Image 1 (cartoon, helix red, strand yellow):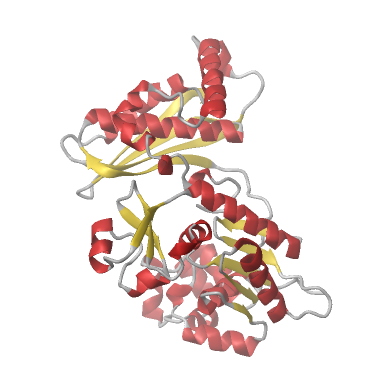
Image 2 (cartoon, rainbow, N blue to C red; image 1 turned 60 degrees about the vertical axis):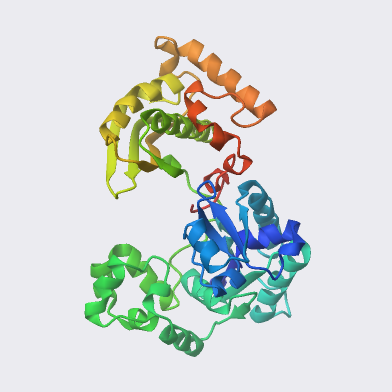
Length: 407
C-alpha cells in the first residue's frame, strides 16, 4: 500500500473568525484585527477586503477605505485556545498531524472504510464548524504542496480532494507560480527568463534546472508538484536551532531610554523562551530597524552558555551601541539567541561571580510572574513602556504559541 494522501487545513480569516466566535454581532460585518499596538491591520474579514483594505495597512488608511469597519485588537491567548481545539479535532481524524501554524495543519488523510477522500474532507471541515464555529477549508492531494494549493483555491469554507493526475494538471496550469509557498520576489524573477510562469511550467521543467535556480528546496517543490511526496509531515516540532523575540515598536522613537526599554523587554521575553526550552545560549544578535529604512546590528559571543539576565545584558549593551543610529527614529527590534546547548544540572554560571544570587532572583521572578501574571515583576528599565504593559493585548504574541512548525 502506498503512502496516504496529505490533507491541508487552513482556517478562513482565522483571527476575525475567532473574534466572531465570542462576539457574534460581528458576523457579516467588515472587521479588522489590529496589531503593532493598534497601528495596523494584521487580518481582515472578506467584507473588509471587498472595501479595498489590505493586510498590513495603517489603521488610518483602513478607516479611510472602510469607515464602517469594526476594528479590534489582537488577542493571541484566545486565538491559541481555538487553535488547539481545532488541533484536537483534527487528531480525532488522523494519527499523524503537523501543527504547522496557529491556523494551519497538515495531516495524513485516513478516511474510515466506506468513506472517500472528498467526503472525508467535508466531514473534517464540518466537524470543526459544528464544535468550534470556525470556518476552515480542507484540501487533500498526493503531496503537501499540492494539498495546500488545493485548499488555497477552494476557499472559503471549501473541501476538495484532487488525487488524479489530469485534475492536478488542470489545477497547476491555472495557477501562477507565485501561488506556491516559497516562490516570490527574487525566486520568481529567477524563473521568468526560463518561461516558468505557472505551477505547471515549474512541474514540467527540467528537475536539474530547478535545482540550479532554486537549490534543493526548489527541487523538493518540483518533486511534490509531480506527485512525489518528499516533504514529510512532522507530528512534533524539531528542536530549535535559534530562539528570537522582538517586533514592531508601534510608534517610532529616537529616545535612547525608550529604545533601551525595548531591549530589556525583548531580552526578558527571550529569557522566558530559553527557560521554557531548557537551553542556554552562547551567542546573541541584536537588530534594530529604523523608520527611514536603515538598520543597525550588533553580535556578541558569551564567555559561557547562559540564560542569566545580568550576563546577557552585559553583552547586549555593546550590541545596542553598535546598532543605534543617533537621532533617527527606530521602529522595530529583534533579538536572536543561537548556539544553543541543553541546560544541565551544574551550569558554569553557578561558579561565576554572582551566579547563585542571579539564579535565585531569576527563580523568584519566575514564580511571582507565574502566580500573579506575566510581567508583574520586571526590570525597572521598562518603565518608559508603561503604555505597552498596561495593554493586555501585548501580553501574548504569536511566537508565544508553542509547538508550531513556523511563525
